[in-house]
Length: 116
Image 1 (tube, rainbow, N blue to C red):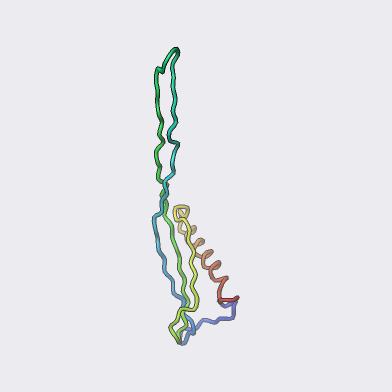
Image 2 (image 1 turned 45 degrees about the vertical axis):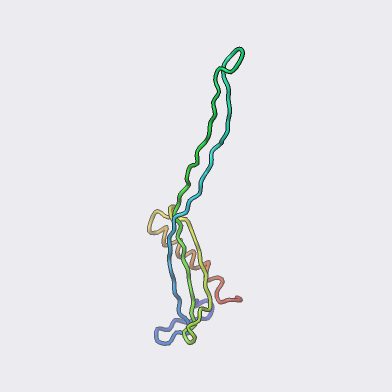
């Protein structure tokens, strides 16, 4: 925010930055093939008939969402909000998580102030 002309003030800030972090489990069903008919054997008639029905395999992952809110301290109004979501399973180390958070904050703050 300092690059945009804002200065930090512990005693009388004009804006307050609030954040919230949420996690959620997401899933989707991945379907296999269904209705594959086949026959085998020699001669007259059917020696064997089979049907293959593929199953549904769930694809499950965890997502994390960072929500930033900036409030005007004089009116207590929310003046700006932004959010970023990423898959958490790829963030294995503490350094990976910290870099993902820093990157999300930089990207979100690139849209602040509104109309920038």
